[in-house]
Image (cartoon, rainbow, N blue to C red):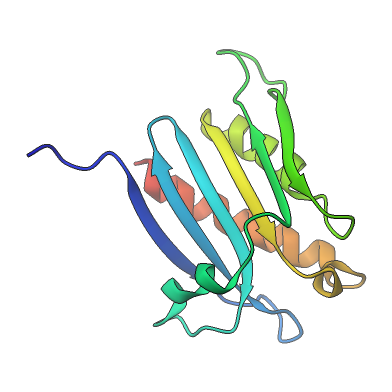
Length: 140
């Protein structure tokens, strides 16, 4: 029997500040692509695998392709679903596709209240940084 080419895991991302929520990152590793869901969670680190079941895939969902080999430009990308409350998945997916040279499907499920000033940019920056850390381990 050959090993599975699809790997899935859910990672708990603790809040960087007391005012910010904890996040869950669901990673599905496919052949040359990742399907990622990032959402707010009230689950503990021990039960974080339950978080994606209570989230929404289609609040802010985008697909980004890596650029051609040797290029440092962002590759093509397209929003798959969007709401008026969030539009962060497209640019974040493009940056991840550039960094990892893989197709990225990214769904960001963070309520608008957490994306507002003063903590929204900090939350997204920390989330993207942690996603890069986790994916760097997954890639190896």
